[in-house]
Image (cartoon, rainbow, N blue to C red; front, side, top):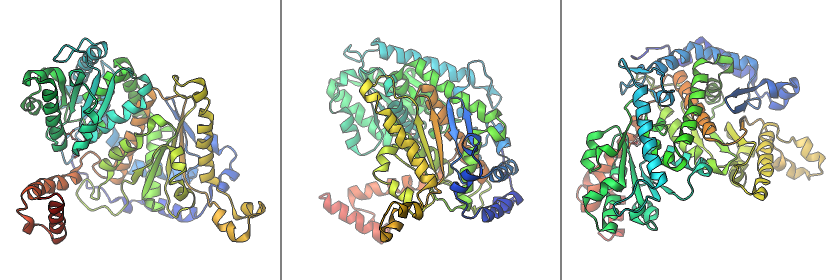
Length: 550
Ligand code: F6P
């Protein structure tokens, strides 16, 4: 797939039509939109798989949606989507196919990269992972001293951490509870220290997860973990084979590190790091929840893949969510997007989405290398909703910023809660529904005054409302539903990148910091080379060295 030399987005007639529509839309309030159409709630609700998606509290009309879909057509979203599914090299700057969808293609499907069907290899790795996971879960895989493995420590960062760490939290109630599963990512030695300080090395398996197997944080932590293990066991190198496995595309790097390549689980350069937890990168998760639940999760991904690939534009949920973000970024100057799960188990979901969205769409040149003149990816943020209500929701309700938000909730609590704790679920969900209602409709000054509030307090107690939200509701949080949710966001991000004409699959913006850190580390150790630094950094480094006692 070569560069497109496309007409700049903001010069397309479909863009101009949207800009004009935005002017006409003006300050139209959700109160008016709902008053004008009593069926709006039902009319503006779509379903995909187990997810019900209500977008009625968005600042859109049928006309807006029609114009947005015309923009999608004019910018070739469907063509790029089909090219992705076909295995074309749509990651232009790295000349790579983008085929995370092949990771969840059913056995027997055909997806070709450079003329080769990759699906058999995907399933061969999944089978190898499943056999290994079963051995660990049953106790058949033992460590160097013959003890069974009870602790799993995944060492990785970015896409080699966030996905499995998030999904393990989400699916905790499906996990084998006598296994301890931890995730180490930060090169701050405290991370590894806290992860292993109470573990018995003889019962510990390290999973070193790195697509490139060159990432300095991961290699440093893995090296330290190996020292800890051998020190604790008083064993030689031979213990590594029993206590270390690797997840990577780089067999030579794995072998260099000293991990037996028989204990390597492979994936491929057409899987982006932030799209990889349904590949071998999910091994820690698979050990925790078991191969069957892992496969259920993959089926959930696949269900939404198929929906994205085949559903008509009017019913295509990822397309809709992507276009809504385009609308707010371009025409409401929205800089941020909140994702607010009403589930304790989704505590790390938004952190996962931050990499997915911000590393994909935090770009400022188009696919031809020209600067873009329109907003690209938003700041994605959020934590579980009820906690947020007592922290930052004030700004959502009465602040000056436009922050579209997704609310994600479930009808049923997880099965293992006691009846007393399960009974709390209605209170949780009452908050869930109340918040989107308050954000949409607010409370007018007249309503506040009618309650007898003193005049001088009325402005402070007024809620302007008109804050756009999408509500995603499912029956319960199952492995399949998690897969559906993640695929939904993956494809939403895809749609936005396609409209904005940026390469959503590279991440050159992370490189400069890595290069500079490599240069600065020896200066911290020796003090030599400060003259080459800018005056701020030089002084900071000098202070650091002095405080460090060097
Ligand atoms: O530096 C960013 C990044 O390349 C991410 O895109 C990636 O997920 C992460 O680092 C980890 O990379 P690796 O899996 O190769 O260690």
